[in-house]
Structures are given as C-alpha cells and as structure tokens.
Length: 125
Length: 125
Image 1 (cartoon, one colour):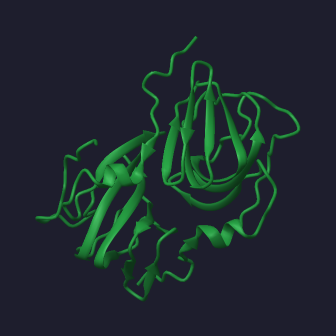
Image 2 (image 1 turned 180 degrees about the vertical axis):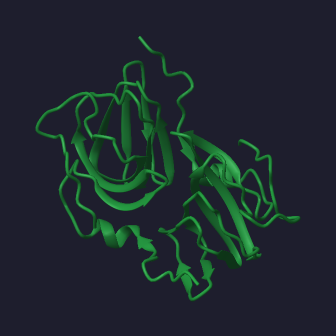
C-alpha cells in the first residue's frame, strides 16, 4: 500500500504569517507541473507579460487592482482573475493584498521584464 | 494593441450561488491546460484515484474530510490539500463543503471508478 506520509494540508494564513516581503512569491504546493504560490503585494509592480504562461491570481485578503493596457480590473477578496499569456499587466495594491497564485513552474514573476523585483529562486515554505 | 474584452474576474460566492447539486463540478476558469472548478460536496463520495493527475482541493466554506487508505486529513476553510496522482482517496463532507479544484482538463471526477456519480461533461458557469 502506498503510504501518504508526505501529504499535508496547507493553511493559507499560517503560511502567510511566515514572511513579510512584498512581491516575493513563496512556493506552497506543486501539481501537474504547476506551482501554487503565496505572495504579498503592496504598491505598484512593473508592467510585464508572460509569453507562454497564463497566470491565476486569487485574492485571499485585501484588494488587487490589475492594470491592463485598456482597463483596470479590481479583484476583491474571494475573487480570482486569470491573465492570459501575452497580456501586458501590472498588479497594484493599495494597502497590502495577499494573493494565491497558480502558474507553471517555469513562470518568472516579472515575465519579459527583468529588474530588481525579479525573483529567480523562490523559497518553498 | 491586444484588447482584453474577455478578461473578467470571477467571484467564488457568486458562482457558487448558481448551482446546488452535490459532486458535480462546474468549470469557472481555464489556464495552461488546467481547469479551475467549483463544486459542492456533501456526505461521502466514492473511493477512487487518478493515475496521471494530481488534484488540488481548496476549501472555500465548510469542512472537507479527505479519507486516504491510511489516514484522514481534515481540511478547513482557507486550507488546501494536494492529492498526488495514484493516491486512493475518498472526499467526505459532513454538512456541505464548497470546494475550488485545480486539475488537468482531462481529469474525470471519479478517476478510475465509473458509477452514477461520474460526470463526463461539465458545465461552464
């Protein structure tokens, strides 16, 4: 019989209490080549896009304003937004927003834009 | 410029108010060949496994008891559990539990077990 010793549930608030940096996603799960990440957003990120990856943003707490080139979508707690590949976007949070992300393992947070906010190695927590 | 007319946020509670059936997942999003689904669980499902797909269960409301062959994991609101491929499991909910699922588009709800609970065609809501 297959044992399930490594299977553990994940509590979002517990994981979110382990870090305070902004714009620095942490890996909290992996499935089917996709990663589940948690991040804290505050103020403005950079404009970027992902050529080959769609991105899922679920708001755990706070408000996420997703700026697109032609409109802004305001995403509240218990709502999610999928940003399709190739779409330029800039996440903005007034105050702090806690976000659960679901995206391919290969996704770089700043997409096609590399700068001081780029995170190549993400912590697993 | 790419227009983003089709991009819309999804409110979990709004979508969950649109249906009442149990064990009948609805598609609410798609990304990278994976589907985001919402479902209402009540009482016991069937023992099954998915040979090639890992499954993500996030509890939006209520309590999910995930029975495994060697233990049971109780998943509360704002917690998630990833059930790896090949793992026999049976979801159980005392009362009603509202669940957000991430899984590959190919995933059948009852996995390797086909019975009256099997849903081949899922509604998009």
